[in-house]
Structure formats: C-alpha cells, structure tokens
Image (cartoon, rainbow, N blue to C red; front, side, top):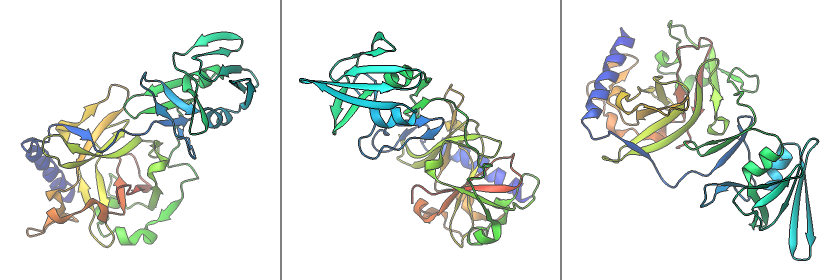
Length: 316
C-alpha cells in the first residue's frame, strides 16, 4: 500500500509539472570540459587539459595519453623545428610542431589540425595518437567524452567498491522503504560511489554515465539529469537524520539520445516529501528542501537484491 501511494503521487507530480512550463531543460553553466576515457575510466591530466578546437578536433597533451597507452614519447629539435615521436611495440608516429600531418608507421597522414605548444605542453589531435597506436577512438558529443579502447564498464559488484553495513549507514536509513529491494527485503548494506567513478554499471543492471544539474528553459527550475543506459528508475536524496526524499522520473522530459543512452530528469523540490515512510504529512513544508542538504543520492534499480547504491552528492 505504501508503494502504491508513492507511485500515485509520482504520477500526479508529472502531471502538475506538465503545466508548469518545464517542457525543456538545458545544461547549467559553462560547457563541460572534454573528458578522455581509457577503457571506460576517465584519465587525469595534472595541468594542461584536453580541449576541442574551432574545427572540432579534440586536442590532448601528448605525453599523458601516449604513456597511458604504453608508448614512449621523444622530443628533438633541428634548428627552429621541434619534432615529437611516439613509439610503441607495434607502431611509430613522427610529428613536427606546427604541421597538420604526421608519419604513422611510415605513411603520411593529414589530420587538418596543427600540432601545437600550449601551456608548455605539446598538444596533438587525439585521433592521431590513438589511431597511430592502434586504438579504437569514439567521440561522444553528448557527454563531450572521447572513448579510447574497450567499453567494459566497471561494476559496483567489483571488489574495489566496498560494502558499508546498513547499521553503519543508520543516520540515513530513517526511511526504511528506500533500503529494500523490489520484493520488500531489506538491503544488507550500501555501496558508496563518487561522481569520479562514473561511468559505472550498477551491479548487473543499468550503466550510469553522468549526473548533472540542469535548468528548465522556461521556468529556471533546477532539475537533476542522469544519463544512463536505461530509463525510469527513481532516485532519493539522503539527508542525515531525516527521511529520504524520493523522486520519480519526469516522464514527458525523458529523452532517448539514440546512442544506447537516455536522459532521465528529476525534480529537486517535490510535494512527494509529504510522504514519509508511506505516511502522508499534510502540513509538511516540502518547499524548504535544498539540494546541498543531502549528503548522498540513492540510485535505484529493480534488479538489485543485496545492497543499495549511494553516490556522494556532487552538488553539495
């Protein structure tokens, strides 16, 4: 009965939002930085960051990417001409600063973008290095990500993600309904992940790629946007010593990205907070909720049975 009440309210919420002018959403703030993922794990660049030039080419500091791919980088100078070489067991790439072409395994290839010096780093088109070293490269225009190598996603089932006992997470379990599987069985514990762990597969279920805050173009209302491999899963905001704040997907904003990913949108402030462990609190002022008061965001899926998954709130 409690689950039914929550489902009814979630449906009513979607209807009310349809009349609020929240028909479309846009990313808040500046365009995201270009991210480079090697075998689904984001690479870290300590100083000079990858960027997309005016022609749309993704430029990367050569040494970090090449060494991550197991290659060696050499530098030389002949008069005023600076040369860069990248060598692996099976491939060889020779480049000259200021030129758009390179010798890849002895064959000249033109990439239409100059190899350049910036922030005391040598930047080259990513495709030149990765293709020159025999790696598959894909550009993800939605996430502004460059995929290199395989797409074997890490899973929260992996040993690197430790299980926190539910008893050690008790400050956030006031709403026991949030920590049960689809059959009503209480989870044994919680796996805690961070935004930097994304993209990641949740157990053996959906892949979550990113979590962002966006705004309704018409109302300026803040929404949570989750890009995932599947749609429709609810979330909950977890506030210490308070009831969980469950949120359902806003159905009419759901977007199929047509790349095997979807966009799910969730309200931040919701009347559903009047339901606390299934009990309706008539005079509860739900409008005062602030996203930065939540320490975690609980990610739900119908396929888990053993543990819940909470991501540290990146908007705190």
